[in-house]
Image 1 (cartoon, rainbow, N blue to C red):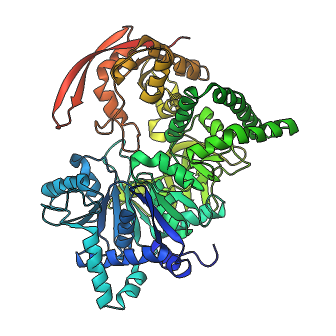
Image 2: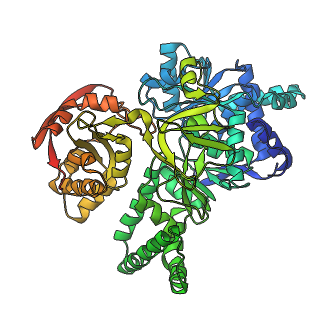
Image 3: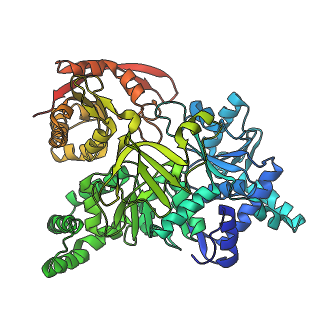
Length: 634
């Protein structure tokens, strides 16, 4: 964009209100109707909330807890904290009250902002345990109009108080807008905590703005995008790609009515920039396949003819070979009959910039969406780098890399194979953790903890976590996560844990994908009443054996999966088996399923397992299950 880059999100907000005041900044669906706010409206609301927060005791250096799904008022509250040189600390909305203290231990959070009664109740429970936050503000008033706990107020009430302060003090608005500095913390996020207590990761305003500037220079962002705010607010992808980019590049941020309406609201918005995790793209592909299977015979025939054609053309295009005139004419016809209508149905008709990251994506899914005409690309980043480090660019897309470093980003590989990054988007250190900072940041380079390499074109390939490099009993070196991601390329596998460190061979604990596998079973008249029953069907075991057999075909002999079990349930964050960002907590899985792992090492064709279950009232019980164990065919 023209002019100097704003040094902070609040400077960007002030600029937007001054130069683009009448442009739509936020659109939020409420009872089916899109409510709009201009940049002037947003500035005024943020200043009113900031004036109210200050009256409630928020001071520079404080954390402000934010918990709930995507809501305009929650984003405004984050910015209001920034105005006061405090910082938001968003928490995943499904975090139970027992874990809240872990995610609120930094920044002396005396004030919290909650979406609704459910989150207010959790925060009240946290206050009873830890004594904070003293003040809890809520957005949705349902269930909170009467009999509120002490210190619980509505955001509307606080905004009204702030407006009164601003009206009584004409110079206060300008004063508030001038306080925030580039070195201030913009947001406090947390690491996934796969191997221990999650670390606090403070992103400063200059980190966020620097990362977005790098991305814009590389063509990954453009001014005035239409963004879709549905990602978890506690994930770096939402803060940087939605709120940060929305402010810095004067975009329009569209917010769905609720998580249950995301798909229909996505179609109504048709964003120009769309980011989703690989699993979300997999689910979208599954939805298309299920929909086409249930469609009319004519539509199925058109889909079955044109989609393989488009996929093959895209495969050739990625190999540097453009289709001839006949191929181009067929593709144009396919655009009219199949590709265009599908993109419109999915809400991707305007998605000029579509990205995926966080883990590896399956080749089939990647090729499908690119063949459809969605210019899907992979990117790589971590919370510590403001999520912006490397990304593919159109015309230079490779299936098995995440692209070259972005402009302004230096990447190198050290002698151990670890990826090191240096950029303005990299944090200065972890919150109140000098030892972790000392290990991660050396001579200006961030040690990412990821293993990878740069290919002959300077494109980065990411293999997995360095800490997860292990050896089999025979000494074969491998990274479990790399193999797991390749197995999860299948639509029928939701989660998987590969077991093999110090073992004679590799085995796998597989969690099937209920939707995809359930639809597969229904088409074959296989009856079931629950996830557990479906997972143990002999036909489903044959299906998963085929998935593992396919993966084994590209593995060296010592790193093939030999035996597997279909688990009776998916790995669950509430059970501590995965993090809120769906990363395996390997030590917990290996401890909890030790009896299964022992059976996988042997020759038994089944194993008895006492499954611990948690009821809705919080009480726990045990349920004994017999799980089948199968060999993977050679």
